[in-house]
Image 1 (cartoon, rainbow, N blue to C red):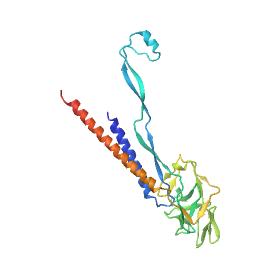
Image 2: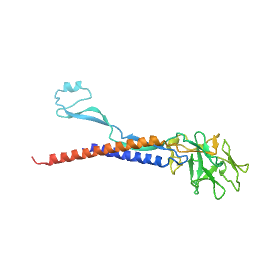
Image 3: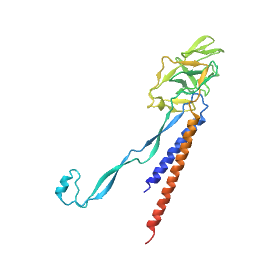
Image 4: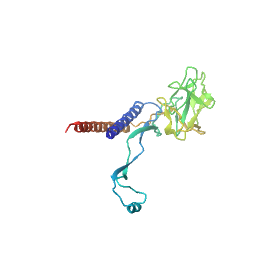
Length: 272
């Protein structure tokens, strides 16, 4: 009886979550290294629909001709008429792997990955994260850090810049401080990077679906440049308009179903 209401409400919840995803993408359009996310919808398993018929077969010979479809007198039989999905739900959000725009900064501590992969960073508690944001800086303790305060990891752990004042990052990720080699940027790649979990503006963490990180043996790094967000504002605005219209349509459907149910209750309950 309430299938129409349930279906409409399910659609409204899906569009609400899609608006959240689009809003988050637009809010981070200027965040360096941010990878936009795309909402992925999934329908409930389809259910088989059938109609019920009453047979009045009394001849056993006729029953034998029907084969497996044997019916006895006044026993209902079912005939398949098709299938129907009950409703849609927001199954997950997947990360867009498209590259962002390149911004030349000429900052010697900025770096951009040319191709696939992620910088490896670590917070103060030792938790490891991955990011495309290469707008690095020298921390108060002389370590190479992100602008969010995470430590940038090199081949030997945290990159220590010491008291140096002149820096250079080579095309293969080597870091020089006052012409001395102080580290090699760690770059990790994943088998399924779309399933990385977003844990901050530009921070990502691995999931069972993304696979374990593998070191990139020959990273391609562009020094003095950073990768901007890969969010396309026009596309996100189109998605926002579509989600708003779909939400309104689903809301109208719920209202109509509620009105019809009210009329049904009134008619059935009315005494003859």
